[in-house]
Image 1 (cartoon, rainbow, N blue to C red):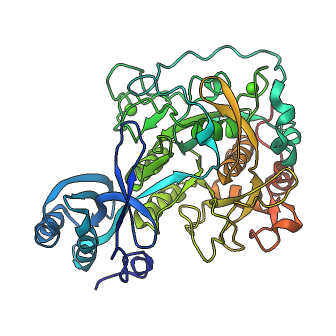
Image 2 (image 1 turned 180 degrees about the horizontal axis):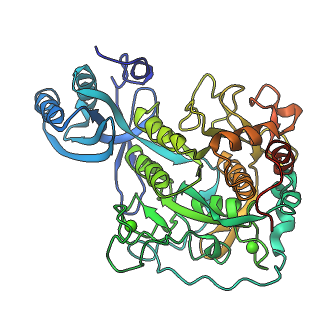
Amino acid sequence: MKLSARSCASIFAVAALSTIGLLGQAQGSRSPKQIALTEDGFPYVRGEYLVKVRSSAALERLLDNQFETAGAVSRKVPVLNSKSGTWYKINLADDHKLRDAILSARESADVIYAEPNYIYHTTSQNEKNIPMPGKGGKGGPDYKEAPTLPVPPVADPQISGMYGLSKIGAQQAWQITSGSSKVLVADIDTGVDYNHQDLINNMWRNPAEVAGDGIDNDANGYIDDIVGWDFRDKDARPFDDNSHGSHTSGTIAATGGNGIGVSGVAQQASIMALRFLGGSQGSGSLEDAIKAIDYATENGAQIMSNSWGGGGYSQAMFDAISRANDKGILFVAAAGNSGTDNDSKPQYPASYQLPNVLTVAATDSADKLASFSCYGVKAVHLAAPGVKILSTTPGDKYASLSGTSMAAPHVTGAAVLLKTAYPKMKAKELKAVLMDSVEQLGALEGKVSTGGRLNISKAFAISKAMFGESESGN
Ligand code: CA
Ligand code: CA
């Protein structure tokens, strides 16, 4: 068999998928995909796999071969093109043939990689209890115009309940900078209530796109993409039907000083809403995750926030995050909520060993590691507040949620502040500064590689020593 070392590490290498059980239907409102489990317990979309081939002729040869080994191939869709080949999504009529199809594909000299279309989930604990207003028709509601902000700023009434901000020294950091709309941060999640009173001012507005004219003005392959894109439902309105994505966005950058609700770690930013997860389960596919990551990479995001996980090792996702790394984009990832050691039981994307991946565990208001939080003295880098975190939810509402999903956006928000003050900092420097400046905690010793919890105030002190005075204050 022609397999690289990485392929061998993945789930099909030996005899996985010998038993595939039907779990049930995904709960998505308009994406009713059936879910199956690999033998290793990783959910994937039934009958679907992704394959990277050397040429289109190679694909035709593969499909001829698959017709014999795996029965009818119902559909093939190019997922993405990269310099080294094209990924295609193959749909098999019979899911029971999927294992044989992937194994035979891997034996072909034409095939670079083949892997199941894994399913990922949000990494929070309790958002299912939050009542949802719904998407309001196809794609979500119309974009509202952002209100004028008060000058001078007016305090956010609910900020006293946000212990996470004080723990990480956000208020002290705001003396240097409170963020900037120049920093473009992609929240790859369940979408965002882009009309929320505390988020609307900090949503990205694609400057090269004209809303609602049905034309792809900036020729990026997406029509009318104003605040981002909905990869799950394939439309220009990535509205949050779950509450998770609005909550993570609010922790990154709910509008600070507008006299309303809460404040993000960054009080100003431009949030690019990239929805690939959704439904009450907050789930989405590998295919859509890769498209979302590539969109962020190709459309100017400087930081990506990823509060989700699942699946096995995916070369397609590794490659997508590598492309972000090549552009100096920081990829913040939640460590996972199974309370296990990521060093022995890797979680993805948290466990991809790439220079731009920064993985975050969750602590509580007493600075203890949350009982649900994954850890890993090698694979998890630092912790941040992630228990009972107050933030924004759809319909101008607010709620407290727990999860490493809530910890990661604290780190993302801190990266936004650093990037505001030091625009030239790339992923490598942002990651180094955020790791070097943690507050050491006994509870995190031997649990995360730095042994500490995020402290943005200290991160600014280190940055000043390393890079000099900040370039832009406020
Ligand atoms: Ca466009
Ligand atoms: Ca506010």
